[in-house]
Length: 124
Picture 1: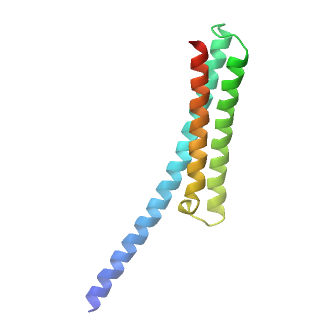
Picture 2: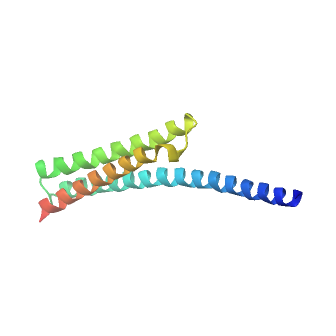
Picture 3: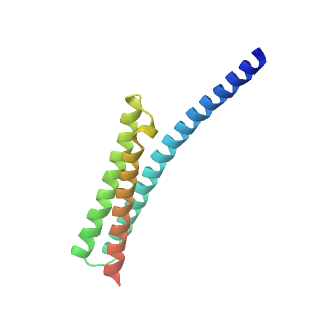
């Protein structure tokens, strides 16, 4: 009888460790994904600026609008990263704010895609 209880306790400890590992991994992946979105938006802004300096593209609404979308994407990513940090500081898990993070990720990626798409559409 005692052996069975010991085995159950070992299994429960393993499950708890897996949950903690999953939570840590999920938190890190969310943070890194938002960082990658920020990097991609920044790189795209840099490419647009280089194209303007090379006079491949003229400054105008076709440049300002995509830069606005890309800047907003960066802003959402930074807000998302800040939200993750605040969540951890308050003692909550990432799983408790998963819907908010999903909305932030979706909005950031939508703004990134819209900015790139608008700029590419203006080139052709």
